[in-house]
Length: 231
Image (cartoon, rainbow, N blue to C red; front, top):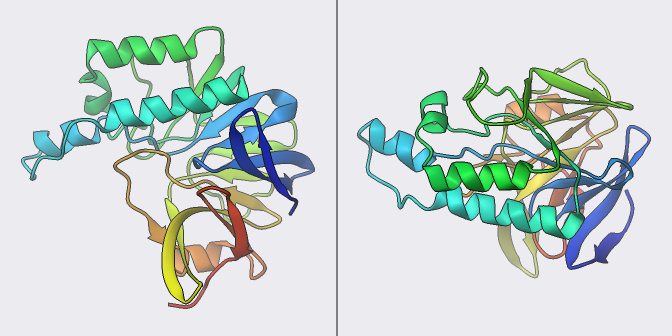
């Protein structure tokens, strides 16, 4: 672990992973300065459209624009030239096709001049008709990006689980989305506006992460704590 970092309006927590110096941003994005790479996971764009399409109670249809607005801010503040979206970028393939023309133009403007990769997720398992390259996983230097963690992998950055942590501070309990990190893997929180979360004391996360894993709580500033494991 390292120290809080704040520059150019960007608040984050520096960490070392797989021999690389990375920054967990307060927004839930991951910044890799040496590669000028910004990584985000689980945008779930179009979720309100999918929910309405399936006949469930409607949600206000603003989450795509809110998510893209926060992503635009992170891109502006970091000056990222490479973007990796770690899967489930769209709530399903039909939601990707149903994006409005304004949202499509906005995504295209964010992609302009950048090397942009959509990693396949379980919600969006195939290519979408939007610019950028589409891959199952991506290897850069000592790091492999994929959507769902491989239990035997090392140097892996993934998403999928939407981790969040519950901790007590100043006599009260708070819950925040969180990065989870051990020596083998780094799990990103969900970045999308309409995304729930899985508490890191759930068995799937307790079993996946090593006993000395750390949770880095999002917010200003991001804060590292031992990964909570008790219900």
